Length: 248
Image 1 (cartoon, rainbow, N blue to C red):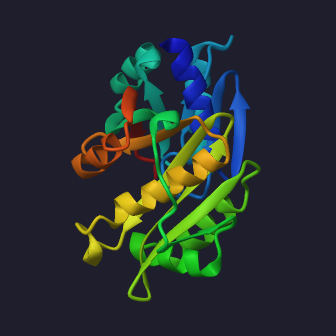
Image 2 (tube, one colour):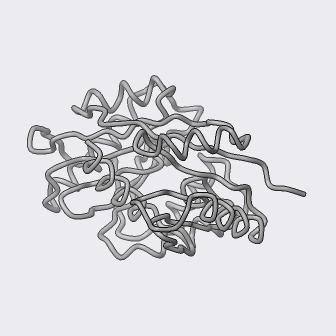
């Protein structure tokens, strides 16, 4: 399981680009002007050679210099570091589930109401910004991040009565298709739009040759967990964040 965690952590980190990254003795430091914890945190990918206190001090200094709180993304394979951070006053937040589905057992088609773009077109960004309640500054950062993909991507929007009611995007990496930011307009929830959008993204993944779906979902989000279970997604492991507020 430890080997699988290391593999999937690397893939999921690569599939959500930060604006800048730094690999430091097995730890991946990611920076994106504060937009999303995933892109503004430290992920220990593999064991290095430096002492843990030295590495922690360096990471805290780097994030303080960037004006960001120090955040670490951890799994069960980081138990020692997790305990150390807890002792240093880092709070555990956002426990999330990493899940996989065998797409060879999934039969999906692209919904006629769903449009797919290779790039995040302006109309998609407008809907994404509105549904997620992004500020102008957050939108600008998101646009920079989403333009950094080297792997194949697709950006999806479901239109109902001339209005985009759900959107999200997917990334193909190796045999995996990863979905991110599946969201439905709050005023339009409970009508199955999310399921139709997910089915369309899975169809895209299957068409591009992906054999497995890979996603990350907040464990407490019961509606999303139920949605993905309907497509055969099964939890592989969990991760969480440890965060300490930036010093004034």
